[in-house]
View 1 (tube, rainbow, N blue to C red):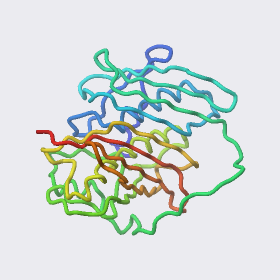
View 2: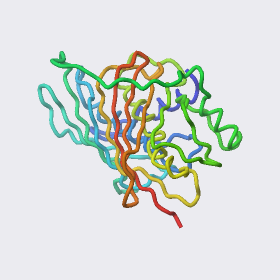
View 3: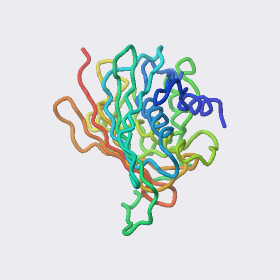
Length: 280
């Protein structure tokens, strides 16, 4: 396991400071803001540590309320809303400087045999072995000074050049996996998929307009994020993330995604609405 992945896992594994209260810190990944995927993964860690096994997280619905301060710790407060026989519900609020910056509702289910089972087909795209690692592309664009090692490896099927974005369809596909092998802890795999699921969602809404999220004139921010887990998976094996933006209006864009394993099984689905406006 590489140092970047080990550091990410350590950061997601929160410090318990009291019953239902946890503390986390921001991952040093060269961003000048708190990455939404990090807060989402840490919130899952806080909630899951209050839920008895074999209950498994199957869905979550989050709101990103304020921009986080990357230089300050984040406090996570867990509300044990309901403990049922088949389903258990948690609510987590992330707090900085006495104010909520994020909240999420999570639902856990006791594993059951499926009465019905189906899944959307995986799109036919180039395999990851024939694509370039996004970390290498970023290094070529920005140089070593702005780069930290990436804990997750991404390989886009049709990447956009942020320095010269072309008009492209409002959909994209990216292969991803952790940069190293992981233990057989399914909750950790869910946390890391949640971390990775924030990557490229809102950027997909900019593709048909020949724009990129790194443009200084743009303010691009996630407003909410939902995630559903359908089947077991491993993040240290290649997963294909198919993303499309179906609408943009009122300074907001809506995007949704589907995550497939290499066997073509749909293992997770995502949805996100985000803010896109002129920052000037």
